[in-house]
Length: 222
Image (cartoon, rainbow, N blue to C red; front, side, top):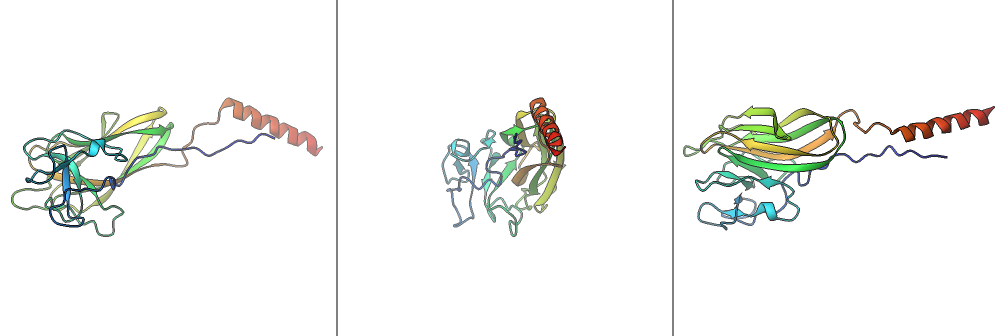
């Protein structure tokens, strides 16, 4: 008897909630901390941590600019004034501050089909002339698939994008801040889920085996 397995592994995002690594730069105690991507070290008003080379991080941050703009990780209630994390499925989030601030990941395991890309997106609360008027682009394999023009004081909001993938293998997902100046958005809990049970089509060999099995069963019922 021939057995045909229907189990198919889908795309897997590494560290979708940005919980790894823990931010060790800490100005306020507990989870009240943040750090830019970089090797400047903690303190001095521009604390940084090399997330890109941290085991388990999975993502890649773009360049951090010397004028205190770029990308990194934050916990709740930091000097960045992110939206409330209360009741949400994450304790850390990406910040995208200024133009060309980005975070991306090469994601393997895709098969042709339709997927739901979901994530939480919010913006900075206005304070001391800094704001959350940041525009964030979502890119898939370098192509913009959605644009979000945020305004200050936007709470974390669950966003969904219906994504059609035509080729199997690995694809690149990127979130990019494009607004010039000190404008900051926040992102976390990124997930990709197959829609309608997306699976590869059965191979011709599997179809042939199924046909032979059906014929054998019919003959033995006579």
